Image (cartoon, rainbow, N blue to C red; front, side, top):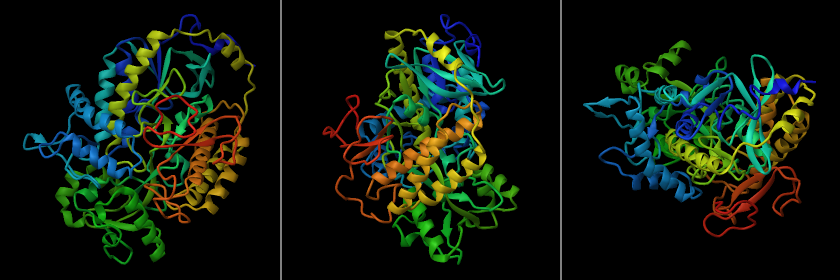
Length: 563
């Protein structure tokens, strides 16, 4: 049994911070900067802070700043990519506030590529204008994080705790008021109180066997929010990036959408260009269409990959425009200036996540979320390329403002009882966590991947339900806790995918290929509850609740304004 006195860094009556920010990517850093105006901030990061998804964002950040563009066109492109399931108000916030957030970032030192003294805007799939700002060719996320970290480093009220894994959220008197944290070095858990908590933990790509996400993208924020009682929305919409490097001996590596934006072509294993058979825009079709076209071509030709061809663009241009991709592929003995690149789809981005309003507030008072962990509604059924970094900036700032306002109305709560309860927990170990992690990822890739069916989803949900029982205990190692979170999030994805009996955007059901079936505009919404199940679902834990898009709502059980 642990000594309760060891569970806090300081006395609970003298808390370390007013605010906790869980995660250190673009959204978390922008939220922390806003929160530091009103109080003390602790940023919690598992592992190293430079392992966030934001760091790996290559293509760029979409923003209407060029002379040929305006926010109305960006708005229309985003809605079109989202297949009618975007929250229009959220998209309007994104495109209208995006330019200001980017200009602010530039003032803080971010350097975006220029040509002839002006910003060099690129075009990507489903964009009708060249509006993609990039840095160092294909290192945009890295540059944005660098500038934000430098700005955060100048704020005395922001303190970072790296290598600290957030185990669970603390809920008292119906609101989120802190977190249980694992010090990865010592193995000790303790409670950090806060007036408000902002989740910015990124996505959950690691629940799939093939993913462009880094190893730490295990869905921790979604899982802990779900366990705490917050609602998840649109979990069936997982974006599969069409072009990740396919080599049997290496992990998938993202080959930016911008490569096709600059003229790269897709060829099957016979060398044939095939995308025009699937969409008039060819290789520049929306991501969901390109991913399924590649999947279909692989099935037709009985191949494990297709090819991305940029050899015709010229060696000097390719090396200058895509230096990171060029160097990475060269390490695997592929010279992309001379050879076609073997590619296949990989899990890339979660459009669903913790439901938030336009200010980042979740259905759990005191808990806010921004970035990929959140479902702000801007992506709908399919994310428009390069909107994610902009979303992190815009809604990270908004979450910070809203969390500050919440904290002005609520003080710290006494969490001594929570600390004593934590001290009494018996630590458990998950038997063969690595094997379970591997089995989970293979199951999700095979049964809940690019193409789904009722048969595959029933098998997946049954297996995931069994694994949920295995991971139900309290664990005390990062590896075990990550697997627990992965199982929880994977179960939510599979449940939502089984519920949605139509195909739209990133969600494709081979048994329901139609889009405009009855109820297609409803959103899947999951809450962890023991209440009687809704008519649409025959399951109890993780009930799917359907709600109508727009002002008319059906079967609404949560806070007002959900859509």
